[in-house]
Length: 68
Image 1 (cartoon, rainbow, N blue to C red):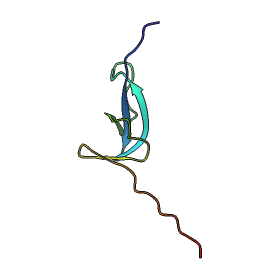
Image 2: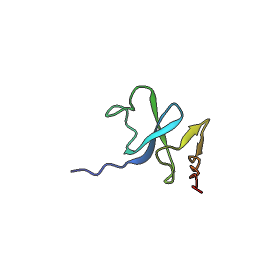
Image 3: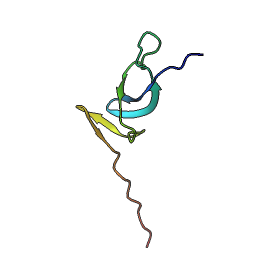
Image 4: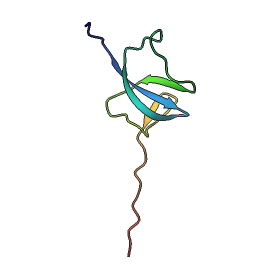
């Protein structure tokens, strides 16, 4: 079986990363679901990140409420 070269893509829907996949970028064999886009991304990008105007943003840390 031939080895397929793949790159890391973030699936972005409404500006939020909903999944990260390995894909060869060939839209003849696969395309992102309707309403989302596939964007080449760096290794640190993951689910919950945002992608706006070409910029990646990590999700804000959720502060835990401390009980008294």
